[in-house]
Amino acid sequence: MALTREQMAQRVARELEDGFYVNLGIGIPTLVANYIPEDMDVMLQSENGLLGMGRYPTEEEVDPDMINAGKQTVTARPGAAIFSSAESFAMIRGGHVDLTVLGAFEVDQNGNIASWMIPGKLIKGMGGAMDLVAGAENIICTMTHASKHGESKLLEKCNLPLTGAGCINRVLTDLAYLEIKDGTFILKERAPGVSVEEIVEKTAGKLVVPDHVPEMTFVEG
Amino acid sequence: MAGFDKRVASYEEAMEGIESGMTVLAGGFGLCGIPENLIAEIKRRGVKDLTVVSNNCGVDGFGLGLLLEDRQIRKILASYVGENALFEQQMLNDEIEVVLTPQGTLAEKMRAGGAGIPAFYTATGYGTPIGEGKEVREFNGRPHILEEAITGDFAIVKGWKADRYGNVMYRHTAQNFNPMVATAGRITVVEVEEIVEPGELEPGQIHTPGIYVDRIIQGTFEKRIEKRTVHS
Image (cartoon, rainbow over all chains, first blue to last red; front, side, top):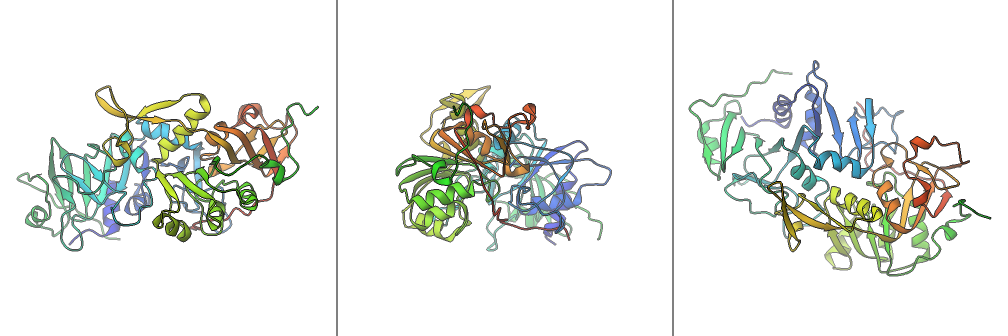
C-alpha cells in the first residue's frame, strides 16, 4: 500500500534530531509537526520571521499579527524569536537551518528540484522555496512517486522549470524513501506491501537497488 | 520648530507627493502587517502606472488588492501572488507586469537598497528561470547570481508603536518585510497603532530607527485575517 499523507509525515519525522532547527513547507511537510517525538526538542522556523512556531491558537488566542508562512494564525512557543524577513532568510541562506522539508512536482537524479511553476498554467510564485533549497544542506523532498496517470516524478532530468539545481539529497514518496548521490537515486526503504518491482517501474531516473530494501513500519494510531 | 517631529495630521498629508509612475515599496506578509490605510489613501488619490514592490498583492477588496480595482498597478515585484481573482485576470490579460522574485532575494534587495549596497551575489535562483540573463560568479566552488538592490520613491510601512521622532517597533510577525521597506524609500511613511512620547520606547528595542522615517501617522486598523486556523 502506498503511504498516506500522515504516514509520510511520520516517516519524515524519524529524520528529526533533538536540537534541530527545522523549516517545514506547506502540505505534507506541515504535518510533520504532529509527529515530533515527545523526548525531542525541535524548533520550527517559519520564513515570515518566526523561530519557535507553536500550535494553532484557540479562538481566544487568535491574533492577526501572529501568522506562519502559510498565512495561518499560529502561536509562538516559549523560547521563540521573531524577526524580519531579511533576518529570516539570512538564517536560511546562511545554512543555519538544520533540516528543510518541502514538496515538489519533480526531482531528478542530479538533485534538481521543480516545485513552483507549470508552464501554461497560472503561476503564483516561488515564495521562499528557491531560497530554502539553495540554503539548506539537508533537505527532504516529499511527493507522490508518480502522477495519477502513472508517470514518474523521479526523473533523469526535470522537465519543469527548476526551483534549485543540485540541492536535493533525500526524497520520501508515497512508495519509497530514497537518497540521491552521484547522479543516481538509491532505494533505501519501501512502503509496506510495495514491491521493489513497482518502485523500479515507477522511477524514470537512474535507480540503484541494494540487495536488501527494508520495509517501513508504522505503529497504528 | 518641528525638529525631529515626523507626525503628520492626516492620511492625505502622509501620502503627499505621490504621483503616477512612481515606485512604491510596501511592507507586509499576506495581510499581516500591511499599511492598510496608506494603501487606501493611494487608492483614493487615483495615481496610476505604479510599480509596487511587496511580497504579495493583497486579496480581492483589501490591501494592495484595492489598487487593482482601478488598474493603478502597472508592474509588481513579489514572491507569491494569486490569492486574488482580479490579479489573475489582469495578469492573464497582460494588464499587469509581474516580476516573481524569491522571497529572501526580495527582502535582501530592499535591505541592500536601504543600506547603499547596489547589488549582491546569491546562490538562490541559480540554474532556474530566475537566474537567466543574470551575471554568474563562482564563490567557494559554487555558482551565484548577481541581484540588484531595490529602492523606491515611497516606502509604506505598518508599525505597532512609534515615537514622534519616527522610532518604530513592530508587533509579532507583523514585522516581516516592514523594516527593510522602511530603509529603502526616498520618502518613508509609517502608520502605527500608537504614537508615544520620545523616551517611552526602550532604545535597544527599536526595530526601525527614526533616521529612516520621514512621516508617521497614527491610525486604526482592521487587521483582516487571511487564514484563521484554530487549535482543535
